[in-house]
Image (tube, rainbow over all chains, first blue to last red; front, side, top):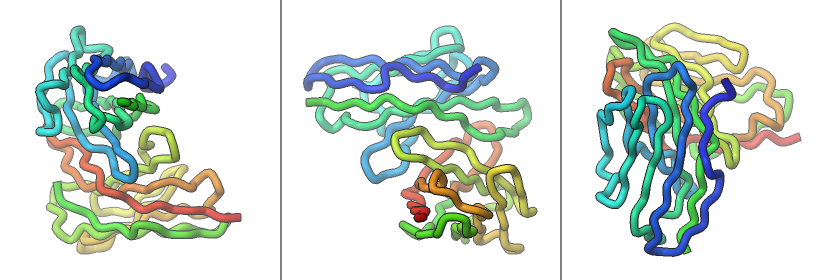
Length: 117
Length: 111
């Protein structure tokens, strides 16, 4: 396993277009997270999945954003009608959450850098 | 999750120890201290975590004060590749908590 993979690495899109990013987590990890990071800031939590169930969504995740993890493996993050303010690095992470608690760290991908022009 | 306070930047000479402080005065009894770092254009990387005892692994050491209100991440022999933003995060291991990042400390290791 080579870690968390994200595709594409870079995306330039025109304002108003839809974009979709993909994340392939570490195979044995049951949790998958999406974060957004703008220049000079730490990553901001967007949403996470436990297997295929989306358990939490940040208020940052507007109606234009939707995330799926259909079979509990890879995940997609779609942004509809992109705006210039959506320009950011979108990071995916995965972790193994043990029954009864216990999490030994997230593994992050290298991110997808979105530029909306 | 409790908030943390870190200096915005620090400098360190190559080969010397880098000691990165973090204040977490409102930490709860069941919250762990996690450290991550982010090298430019990469995703954050897990370094170490602890509850109340000092911890050491191949990357770093974590020293947590007895009252748990602060901690220090120690890179014993900093290299140029350790130049990164270092994030100190406190969180529980409960099922529904997630990592909340602040702005971190930008560590610059110089020759």
